[in-house]
Image (cartoon, rainbow, N blue to C red; front, side, top):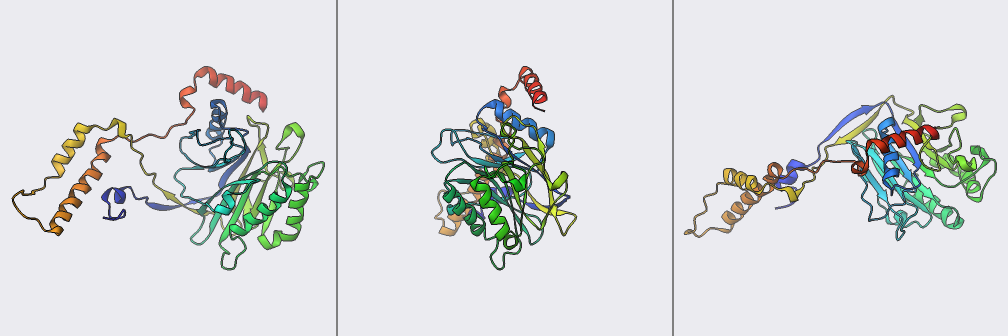
Length: 357
């Protein structure tokens, strides 16, 4: 029996529906860690208040030991390899928007430009590739190569890929006066030169923030590179992105995205596959379900053919796959910081948020 023939897989198979959305509400933020419960609660507070469709996060500083969840959101992350604390990117996407994680070895092995990329359908033909990016200072030659390679590897400019649309946002540590910084750095000069020479080829625009994204240095380090076929609906003066105060050394960027050619994005949804808590299985109920539904007459004094044996095995397997749905409780999605939050912590966080804003 193949996986697709398995009755449990058939029942749990994700059903796809479509719905129209006026825009995608996206937040991009250098979180400066999601390790502590305080930092996770800050992210939880942000998404509860703003209810974004996606959050593009840089500097998560997570590693494989960290288990992070946010209720009603799927989290796709790429931790910095072999790092105890540092780097890392992630995307939170609101359920039930259907997405696909893009894993290209040459991209995931980048040394300087760290990324997490997903793909969502925004029309019958068009796919939007969304990338959360982070690049630490230094390693300029490596960054230049990886930045160029990112666009190439996502096949953004290949013939026949007209329906691939790209959006990249994050802290690239790039400063240039053309996006309101007082001085230029080497990386800013590279990106400015890239825009001057390749923005038409890649149909790319750059957006910076209305206020400094790195307030301590008065710098505009967090930027958004977007396909010219996209339309930003809530731009601030001088075509800049709105900033939000956040519990980090960076402000958050928030923007609404649609297409130039349509009033709506047509997205796909997916039903969430249940996760079972097998440790809490009601074995008595499991047994009763099998006894009630799997009433097979298998005679021990008859030689069965191979076909009959296979038929009995399939029938038994079908019922042993279905029984857990009624006897094993689902694992409910929770916020990973929830057990550590009490009213005192909420009050302190509210006071801190007031001071930040």
